[in-house]
Image (cartoon, rainbow, N blue to C red; front, side, top):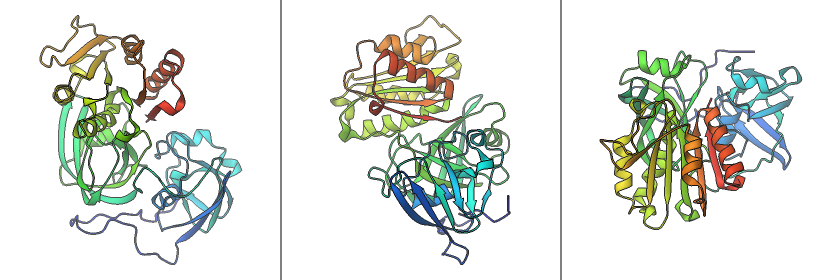
Length: 375
């Protein structure tokens, strides 16, 4: 059942206005989550999804993409009535809707509800800031390649996030929200830098390329994601990315550079694109390599073009290799996995290939792999 209840975080031309949830109203709903670890309760504001309400209050509900694509936030309604925001969300293929199963990221309660979650659920994020709703204004739109755009959002209030996290974006007129990792890194900042690679049928990408203009407003929720970098963990870093999945890797590189992390640690970046003309952020890669005391290697993997060169002509700090990015990584990293934490982001087939490389070839354990798979 769908309804036209307005969503949280309305925009105004004044970005100093509070973007947080409205004051508790009479139709605030109480959610009880029954999980493997017991029962937890929280309030859900009008127009808010169950997943967003729980996460912003520190409840560790399961999720991965938080946009209706992956199906990781599956739950079953034990009692109460709910409405589905995006009925065609791809993740619905993984739930049995006739048995009352839902995607929490797409479901709003119409009454107080009890939901059952097949996972351990607790309260408190030990590493990450609690996600919140923000108003965002589109301030910069810069095309990097024919199908890649870098864009920047000014937020209604400061945000802190960990390197590797993402936010959800909603544009009026488009179904659902989209997840994009920050390219930048910062604490208490009011600007987010993000990147989008256009793909067939991509609603937000098409909007950004064809209709978006500076000054428009976007609903923002975050930060989210657990594929994060923390210097105190004291690992060498391996990053494997495809397309706009490189965003989170740029954020990790930015924080590592700010912390002078590569003075005492090694870093390896493998970025997969089809052809050399499809590559972007080359100037930034070069800057990170130059600041890394010889301890950072960046390799562009060209899947559809063998240019015959081992280094980029204009940016010699950046290496080039022919092949799928996970295959290039496997060849280059043989015997070099000591004390490595691996980060993977990109299209699902690329992520699956990189996971196989690390688990089968490098014998990496799950606690040493962090990834985002955005479909």
